[in-house]
Length: 174
Image 1 (cartoon, rainbow, N blue to C red):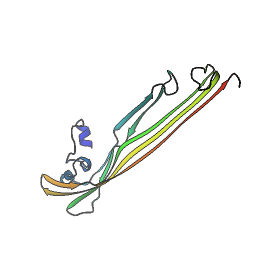
Image 2: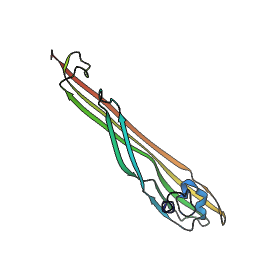
Image 3: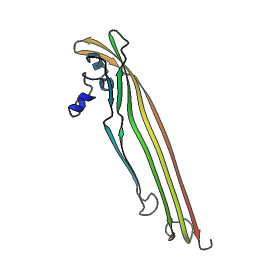
Image 4: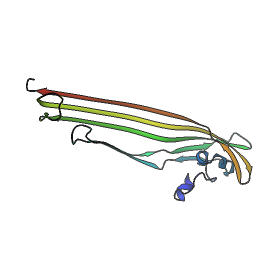
């Protein structure tokens, strides 16, 4: 939450903001009032390298730098003595694309055809993985400095992977 950002990230589940729905749901009962939080400060750099992925000394590399929304949370002011909040947590998000196309006139060392004079290769690999948690938090204040809370979560994970390799060649006989 914002308090943890201002304190350099040393706060976990502070009773001062609504980010406690994830780390410390009982602290929600001690927070002063209704809040909404959109924490989108997370940055993600992902790099994947496959050594010799498209042939000898031909590496495949994919890299992406992006922002990742980490937590959206808000309070539902529907209960008189208890607190009710919702949250969405983006646990992971990976979108990977590797594509490589190679054509060569000197195909003797890379082509599966005997005595090849020409070769062409097309390699494609696509993967998308996402995991999100949807939660509802209930909290009750037991005393001025003690609260009890529960956060059940529904996790949704999706994954899609596709890969293909196309290799063509021609030898002296055509």
